[in-house]
Amino acid sequence: MPKIKVYDSRGFTERYMASPELGQLMKGDFSQFFIVRVEDMYRLVREAVPASRSTGHTFIYITEGEAIMTIGSRRYKTRRGELLLVPAGQVFSFGQGDVNKGYLCHFQDALLQGIYGKNELIRDFGFLSSWGFPYHIRSDRQSSQFILQLFKRLFFEYSTYGLERMDIIQPYLLVLLCEINQVSRFERQGHRPGMGAMFEEFRKLVYTHFRTKRLVTDYASLLHVTPNHLNKNIKAFTGKSPTQWIDEMILAEAKVLLRQTSLSISAVALEVGFTDQSYFARLFRKYEGVTPSSFREGIEKS
Figure 1: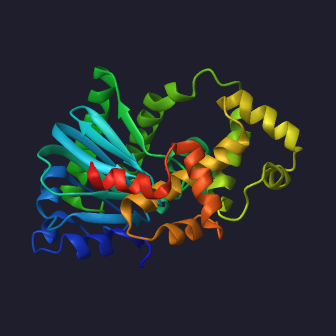
Figure 2: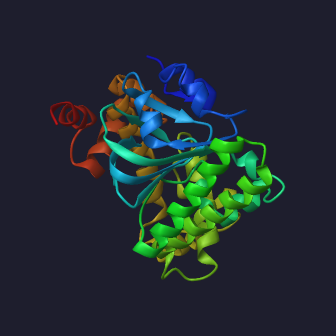
Figure 3: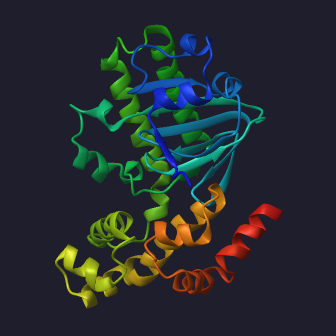
């Protein structure tokens, strides 16, 4: 069976939104950056978009109605005053028929070169990393207004001048990232200083290696710490052991494949690093309470 496809913005729009009207929305080299009204973009979608990955980051901010999107194994419903971030590399899919208004902004990390290096960008805005998770932000009224004004300013620049005035687009995008980072910071409150760096590096390594490395000792070695030190720090910082994080990453990817592809159970097991389908099924049932087959059947019935 085909694997989940990875698109850049040009490839994605040509596949799902091919239309003469698209040329009126997109300006210049939109593979690096674009911002459009959600209602204008959704109108051009000719069919439901199956499980896909993007090489860039996407923000969706809703001002009226709602937008429904599946990211990973979770379904998100974004309403007025809410923002949804789909980091590069995340699996997403969505259908047709949503009635909404708002803004959709898409950009590559390279757009901020000259302001941030890759490492600094991830350090300050970890939610943009390829191992990050979707952010569904319900900000307070004041923050929501700040975010809306930034989207409006970016949209004006892009729709009027395209990419001619990058000296204006870049700083406004940076301020938008800072505002989103500030609003989402509550999720990290209560964590002790110094412990977060190890967790973020650990999570990054798990995202990269979970298919081939499933032991705490593997990651302790990569982080140059003892397994006991890694266990204590991750458990204290998150409330969950490293083993739980490793297993949950495996299960998260498996649920994406079960939900958004037609791969067989044995093929899903292989995709997440298990040659023994029965062992994969036992691990899945341990956390989900059902077998992979039952999980998929439940999705099909819902």
